[in-house]
Image 1: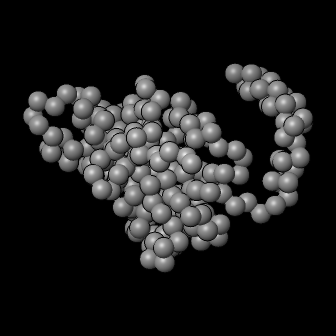
Image 2: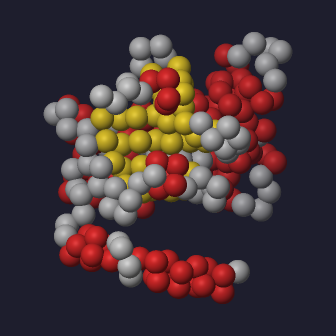
Length: 215
């Protein structure tokens, strides 16, 4: 497996030495100025640069199990450091929290973390998400399917992380000064669609339905 990754790098190097070499060289020499901070899941099937067709330098990325932003009071130093650097130093104008349907971390929380054996760090990490999943289950009809509960829990988890972002002073200040916007996304592994949270309707809608036609 490692050899295949190294061979992949060789292909990457040979390809980029050509037409994009000058661009990458300038990118390395300049101060980075990403368009957005992207908080996403570690799931190997969800690649932010691929699903947004972003180039190097476009996204500042935080990835962890179930795209979680712990509250500042329970802060994970890695997540907090990345937030402070991206918002306080790089001045990113947008923060995106992107979950995905089919998220294993959220499924574990929905099913109950008592089933997570021998993984104490994972159990601790997902405990707040288990609480969110319990609220979702209690608000849905009694006949809701396991799939419906899972999908709604994925969406609720994204919205929960958006709320957590504002517990960090650097984000709260940027929000107060209208220097940053928060966005909730959910990517569908099955349809490949991207769903965006719409404040006006309080629901996740397909990005294609929300985008205005280009002039």
